[in-house]
Image (cartoon, rainbow, N blue to C red):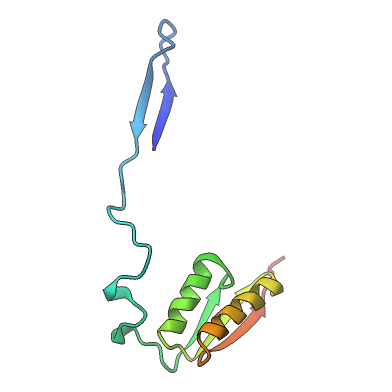
Length: 109
């Protein structure tokens, strides 16, 4: 990412300072790697109930899916929109029929 900062020198408006942001994360993973895989025996969630707020989409849904892959017994998803929660529940139930998916609409407004 480059940021152009206008020059403060009134005689030379063409000058600019370019700042480059340092790369904070050297490696970006698009899928779980071996030590964090939900299938890793040390991360097995059998017999556990998991509560995930905002679990109907995005990162929350990905977390719910990972817990389902790790054999959680029950997953409780909360969110603001019932239709989106039901879609998420249906997708998880189809992919993981042994996991009980419970949804709760929670709107703080």
